[in-house]
Image (cartoon, rainbow over the protein chains, first blue to last red):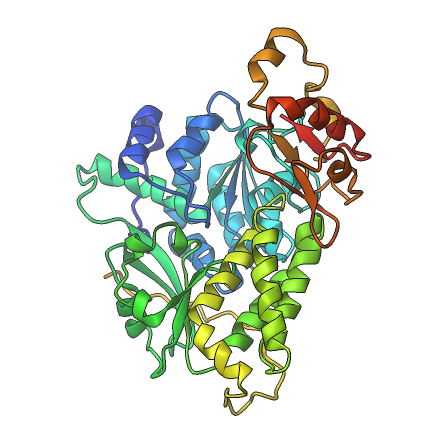
Length: 386
Length: 87
């Protein structure tokens, strides 16, 4: 547990090799969304004197875990950043945040000393993607760039600076793992994750839960709605699971699908409209650099909107089946892949509801109203560690 | 932080033993940001590249067969924006 953990790392007494061994043993994977093994990433940056970027952007609109780390695990975050920086001999530490968290980030940077700075990232979905951050930190645009080599190797151009991008929660957990091991408690408790509950729950917010916790228990604790159709896990580019499938599944069983830790509950609202809103948002947030994403996502969002009407639904469904696999994997970043994953899983989970639409059978009182984009952030709420 | 193909060792210029060794392991990669959908690649190498409905290349995954390597090299060289790479 990292939230409200006030322990501090004695940096003079850490051993970088031992830390790396701990990360391997704990199989710590990045908590930013991609789930890449952290130890492997750090190793690939060693000997390259990289720029270390701590990504505390909460790039997922509904997710509030990075700000939770900045405010409630600040000591561990600062110590974790110092620890990783010493492991890779980083020439500077950059704390990347959106404008709302600049002051919190400044406090962390002040603890880290003169080689640390705060980077304010534009409030766009893809601006906090790893390569976009690397570009922005190096004085370029906050847009993803084509990197055929890992960012820790400089991406592509030889003039590029080697960049190690780690999520804020991941960095704080590195410090916590070291402290646990120093106290002889390594591996004594199951690892924990910060999860943001959103959607139709009565008390949305961030909770820290051990990975053996079941999705159903988390949703119940946050005040589950009476009608629970499904949950979206990971983020807007995540995966829909039916409530029956999701409820008994533990966070560990979700594996990489847990992404940035979002659990959004779909209640009684028409799921086609919610998915449509998210697709429209993702299409609008494309950086517009890669053709398949710039043209494909708006096309997919338009197809989806046509699913709701009996006359247009069958043709729209066919187009979606054709277009979704064509767009996947064809961007410089994984933005289109996430949109495709979300839409494909929604087709599978909400198929019956969609067929009801095709026969004119979706009776939601506000069906005629313009679907609201689900972007209002949940209030920040912390539960005591369980 | 823009993509500069000139910084990379030119695969076409790589001769001799290295080329022998790599034959059969070369893959076509598209720089999706540089690509502006001219579509020449699909004309030079229809065996491995088709165009989607918006005119952007869909490249067959996997190593390019040795007998197609010459065509693949030509397709990469003919790309007006050097977005098709043979690696």
